[in-house]
Image (tube, rainbow, N blue to C red; front, side, top):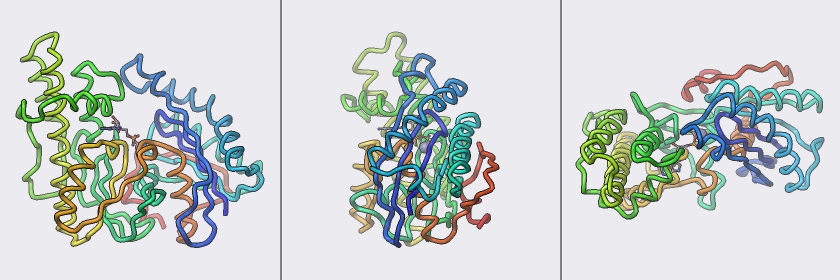
Length: 347
Ligand code: KG4
Ligand code: ZN
């Protein structure tokens, strides 16, 4: 069972081929990615119309590349999967349109995949794959959620951000420090030379008793500190502020993840989404979970941010679990807003 996956929800065009024969974890045969980061950097963030146009330019050459690398031909593909949401409507429509027209021309079924389900299952492609059940910490540019996952397709929301996402907190704070888009990795790099204790920044909702997050106040606190320091901020103070910001975000993510594990009684944590690439987050989660005998699983670093492999994987795992919505109607819609815990209700 060969699945071709296409991701185009935001600023990365990703394509991948997985073999989902049998019941083992689908095998990644090949994948290719084109990141639009350089194109959007001049604007300080993603420009949706430019993103859609670039997906159009990239997707077919990437499909050729993936088939070539995987040494398969298009007519060997059994199912074509695409990201149906959430994401930018125009960008999603490119992947959906290409997937459905390709599938129609081949007479093969298509399947719309939830982008966050892709992120959440991506650690199954790592050298240390998880087993069900687990708590998932989903930390991307648009989402911050804690989920209980008992099997493929069954996602129970335990808590989420009530305002900004963790990635957004990284990106907005980075912008205030004059760093380029997307700020997360740049802020993490700057923080390496800084003192995380230098500035006292808020840890919103840390003791709220629930599993929700709030990051918008943090960005305001960073702005206040930056204003106090005046322009231009000295190199040492900039690094200190970056380190203090990262420490605040990471502390909240670690504490709430542990609370979710405690509440559910589960002994496994899966971390997914772009912020899951953050080294301090990995270090602190590993240390805290080790103490409590909890296993932590991450995607391979290059599969933390958006990619086609996670979309092909999620489609393959759904097909194996017998809960796929693969169809040959070829009429498509996209879902720019689509809560992950609504998936189960649709089966
Ligand atoms: O999952 P993703 O690629 O896209 C969405 O679905 O949103 O996540 C992108 C987010 C951005 O906010 C980016 O700044 C953040 O992940 N990110 C990081 C790191 N690498 C990516 N944040 C902190 N540290 C990193 N190393
Ligand atoms: Zn994503």
